[in-house]
Length: 402
Image 1 (cartoon, helix red, strand yellow):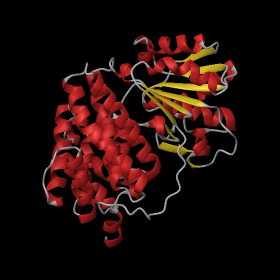
Image 2 (tube, rainbow, N blue to C red):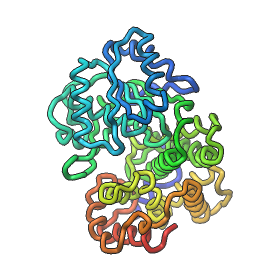
Image 3 (cartoon, one colour):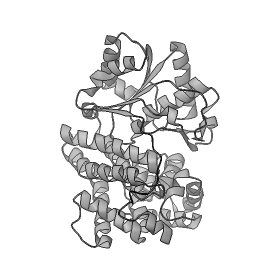
Image 4 (cartoon, rainbow, N blue to C red):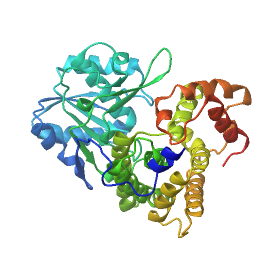
């Protein structure tokens, strides 16, 4: 654990090596979606496929984006069949639509599922094959189409990531397919688009964003660049989420949360995640638990486990002080304040605290633990976890809810 503690020390040395190429142009502000036509044309787009879902269409956001794209003289087709937790079958349907339209630029409008579907489509449309061929990093040899990402939720941070998270239609295994060419060229962050979110969506996506900020901050791949983004993301998200849940019309809080989610997405891109996501993904795959809820149920238990390491304590303490949830000088006490602040956020978000409320029983724990050991994100947790460790985490979430 000595090397892990050193890695997770509060201050990251300015001499720690990293190799990072930032790729995404961020356009932020109320009404920013109005610039989508200008940016699409600037990227050379002429035939645009808008990838979105029915809820975004009903909210009027798709019509607004289409209007501004068409005003720039661009031809637009819409694929509005995105589903939550998209599968390989969903991506295949999107590829069909892209081919029919002879698409030369993609716009992903919506939550992480819309952006992931657009990225998944981009892999196959430009490089052929099937989604399984791109599971991993850097497996697409050919250039991809330009992508504009427009999030309508403050959650996944997919707009700042080069990964498409797509589930295998048959096995339900969630595949992280990453390639630098898959990253958005432009991400448009318009807080006005998040005002129409139902409270449950704001809550679940906000908790997901918070987990991204915290887990990326203690990941084994963490570096000075990602740590900077993890800190700023936590500082935005922790207070911003509470304000959005109590005052959903507060546009400034919406913007704070949206920016925090994008910063957390940038942190993930450069440092990965940890055991909260490794344990959450099997809950979604096996029990259909909404991703933000699954991560929320597991996050406090994972944080307590990781906080046994003094280096992780220092990181948590730093995040707690930056977010104004602790004034403690001692790292162990400040780190506990951060965990308690997360639990309060979960209570405000009305996230069920026990796995039992999601239909999980003690008989399911062994299978869940096996699935968790197969999750890629678990490799980057600051504490190495065995199958028994994962099983113990699930048991705590079942028997001793936060």
